[in-house]
Length: 181
Ligand SMILES: CC(C)(COP(=O)(O)OP(=O)(O)OC[C@H]1O[C@@H](n2cnc3c(N)ncnc32)[C@H](O)[C@@H]1OP(=O)(O)O)[C@@H](O)C(=O)NCCC(=O)NCCS
Image (cartoon, rainbow, N blue to C red; front, side, top):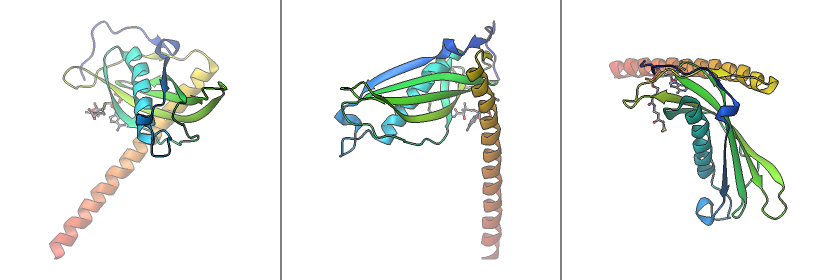
């Protein structure tokens, strides 16, 4: 892993907070005028990347996005509000939380649409992971989110190992069947 010189001191969660507001236009919607799930995921990815970029101040790529529940439909003409911040920084990767609301344009009422956790990896110009600054959780909520992010990382790693083992066993089975035939 390449490491940035003069590694900056740990950053606060507040310094990573990012926000994006979008007006939903017909091009973002399906035939019923509802926001497309893929378009929402694109907005989530962008808002998440902003927080990751503010933390690392280098190139970042999306390595993983956890499953998303779409709780509330969003219609053409609605305002979509997305907020993100870094939950925990690891060595070259970091977890970002993104929360999404819809604002009804006439009443101003806010409804929770979706939440997602994304993992970004900081890379250099050659695509190699680079070491990132630490994160200082300060408030009780930030500390809870940081602890939860560690648990989710352990869960992702266990799941990745399980899938790898499954692929290995499948390849072995296929090899045996081919040899028999
Ligand atoms: C993400 C990527 C840079 C990781 O490269 P790699 O050679 O596998 O790197 P490593 O195995 O050394 O892992 C580097 C870090 O990435 C994390 N990581 C790698 N794959 C991951 C995954 N699928 N989910 C979560 N974290 C992952 C590792 O846990 C590690 O974190 P740490 O340094 O904080 O401990 C590489 O897989 C990549 O370029 N993927 C494509 C990304 C992309 O194009 N995204 C969509 C468009 S932005």
